[in-house]
Image (cartoon, rainbow, N blue to C red; front, side, top):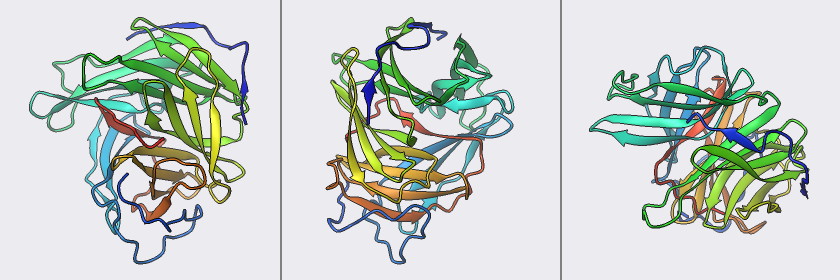
Length: 316
């Protein structure tokens, strides 16, 4: 499925502006079908914090709870974060508490074909706090031909353990590149071709030596993609399910239980989303349980996950 790229397009350095218990017999519900009635709440304690960018440039946050039936928390909107209609791609954002009720938020965006480092702080009413900087700092151009970008931040709770910040991006020709941050710049650290069939991809596992994604393909497969963090290493893939997953344009995932994942699949054609409980990734033996359709219309231009500072992902 993959081939390692020898020559990596784009600059080598970008200046910085900056499981829960699952039932063994559970199977995946084909994309686009309704969940069976009477779904049990095997992951009642799990939830996914969903962010979005609206057409006016507002930043929203809400919780999707894996209850039976699925419930949605109230939406919290922050106006004026981005210029209206400008955000083309966005990574996972990190939310870090500030004071008693505020939150600092940061991530990467593509606007008008350029990569930006975006950060701001909200108060207890989820409005921009004027006491803190609100930045959309340009990193570099040449990003108009990227299908998706994703940032992975390893921030151990133990300050003595090494931290890591990686950026992944897939070009429209299917080439996927990875950059590593050294604190002042992004440096290319790996690349792979052969990913043109991938539609959606979500990070589900992160260790000191590798990162694992869950991806769906245009042919309907659901696969894991494991990429060692070693310099210029290449990824490997394993099939989780062989069909029925082609309907989702985007996958968003978060931790569920000790070694599992709560997975959201978004179907842009129908503006709908479906939630799944996924056991620890183990090829076709991976448990994938449908939790049903999310009671939300997915009509905003951009959706992403809002992650905590110490973002533990053990699903891969």
